[in-house]
Length: 302
Ligand code: IPE
Ligand code: IPE
Ligand code: MG
Ligand code: MG
Ligand code: MG
Image (spheres, protein in one colour):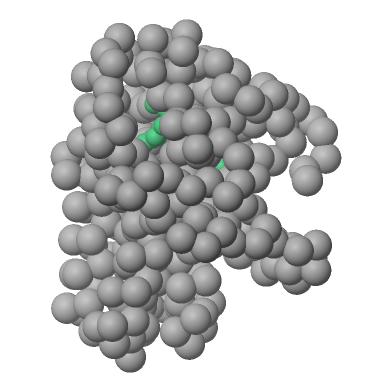
């Protein structure tokens, strides 16, 4: 498989304003959809805002916007889907950090939800963010699609979030604590716990375009599966190689939690070729800026 050239400085320079505009757009929309902190129950609403408006790369919304843009959908029609995937993602992080799961105290350079508030509030925060995601997708007024397509989007997000998607992948992750797992098991876990929501982000963007052809949706879906898998591989590399103040979460937590998540040796350095027979052969579809970490802990973002 041919190796891909890394993005040039010029490409990065051209992409940055677009990435920034997507981030600003979704943050404004999230701000509007989240209940104000002053509305009762205030503690729960504060915790929901803490968990959602605390930074983050906003990669999933970016994928919604970029897919929609490629298919000619105006950005304002994509805000609902972008918010919905980010709300599910925020909920997944709140629950992922709980003591019963990864037991993390730092997220995006700030105390995790159960540390900033308490464990019961963090559980309810996850629940409430999840249901808000579906409400947004149901009610979003700008979405110019027939009701049947909206239902399809809701089903897509539900599948990606549930036991056959993210939650199922998280279950596999917990089952594998203390176990040696092979590459196929590692890929299955990644594809579900992280890949499913990334894939849904692209698919929701595509469904927002009433004119998208089957072939276009299939190609986008293939791309989304590849980057979803690669995204978690890179997250696992960052857990080993990253610095806490850059990744905004405690370095080395996977091994501290007795999780064998080390990606295979070929995944570490370009050209990142892998033996055939593995779905990770699609690694090279990954674009290096996707989970380039933000610098947290009060440092300027990079
Ligand atoms: C972290 O996701 C959890 C994974 C699924 C790997 P991100 O790396 O997208 O986290 P934020 O949203 O930027 O904090
Ligand atoms: C989390 O994977 C995937 C989710 C569904 C939230 P990780 O446990 O590796 O994510 P981080 O490293 O805590 O962000
Ligand atoms: Mg986890
Ligand atoms: Mg975790
Ligand atoms: Mg991780």
